[in-house]
Image (cartoon, rainbow, N blue to C red; front, side, top):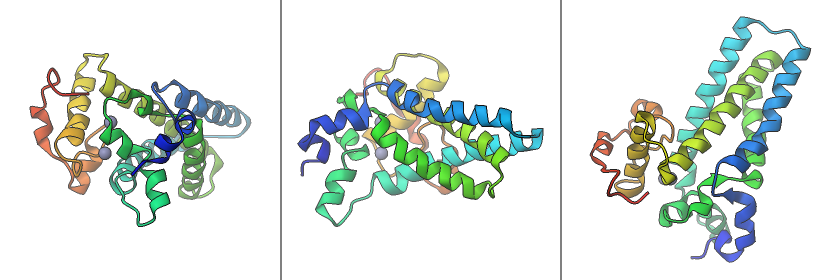
Length: 208
Ligand SMILES: [Zn+2]
Ligand SMILES: [Zn+2]
């Protein structure tokens, strides 16, 4: 089966990119807008703490759940599979193809609108909480894109990138049913999909 991005290569350039920068730049207006709106309304340290916690907790769970329950999903409809497998499953099958490592605006903006709408509901309509949640969500998202890029290009040797590279590459090369977290192991541990064997991955010999 050919995915949509293989049938229509120009579509790939609008959906994905080989660096995190396009997705991060697409998310930047949301960050600036949220900061600007916070200067126009009243907020407290409680709304800052609650909103920041909500944004980070929501993003880390979304990152995990999207990967575990949606990215790996097989649909009955041929078109749905051609569309959906253009994303993460194409990346799994073509780990050497760096042009699909990160999101571009055409993927990011609809996802952002869905997530901000869900955060609005979780924030119980409290605008100051929502704005702090959006700020921490966008920063968490930007970090996520940078981490996925770093794993597959391996430019940094710091302990965190070494740990998360082994973690994610174990998911790629050993079992796609474990270690769904892309920035941490937290939700894998909580929800029973953690596999500690990632520690055996040798970053000097594995394809990344
Ligand atoms: Zn990957
Ligand atoms: Zn995967």
